[in-house]
Amino acid sequence: DTAVSQTPKYLVTQMGNDKSIKCEQNLGHDTMYWYKQDSKKFLKIMFSYNNKELIINETVPNRFSPKSPDKAHLNLHINSLELGDSAVYFCASSQVSGVSTGELFFGEGSRLTVL
Amino acid sequence: GENVEQHPSTLSVQEGDSAVIKCTYSDSASNYFPWYKQELGKRPQLIIDIRSNVGEKKDQRIAVTLNKTAKHFSLHITETQPEDSAVYFCAASKYGNKLVFGAGTILRVKS
Image (cartoon, rainbow over all chains, first blue to last red; front, side, top):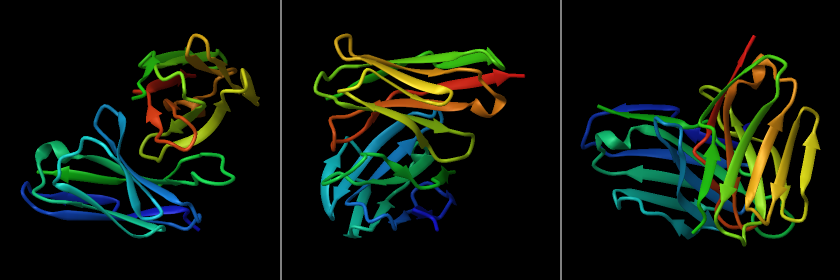
């Protein structure tokens, strides 16, 4: 019973292509996130959605477009991929409102390699 | 916005020794300070957290201390074991807002 699942786990593609990563959580959380982890292991937040509403949008190129069809899903679409987009992308969720521990639950990560 | 600095970036200890990782944060309004452990090729997972109304928290071999005046918090691991080898991240947030992570510490426990 995976709490936060994301697909695909691995993605190898050419520069200029468009790709998507999907994420689903079955924890009933109200908030979902995308984090990028680069080769130096730094975890940087990209986006956050609370109940389908975008609440955090860090300085991310507009080639990256998140979409949240409902509060259990948050997808990430990337246009015109560049070499620098190569990284591991982690989806995460947490319960922000009401009774909550505030803990972030991460998916297994999607390793994107742009050639 | 919040800025979290973490030291050291790498730490090697002998099995059985203690390890200490330190973090400082910039936003005095932050009130939630978790620590995450990330094993090689795996997802980050919460190992312990502390809130601003508490100065210290322990869970078996790990403990976290918080000094709100100085705006720093630390992770202490005692009796280290090879399975403690991982990347450790500290983080800070105002409760309910985005979590800002430190740059991570690679801990190597040598047996």
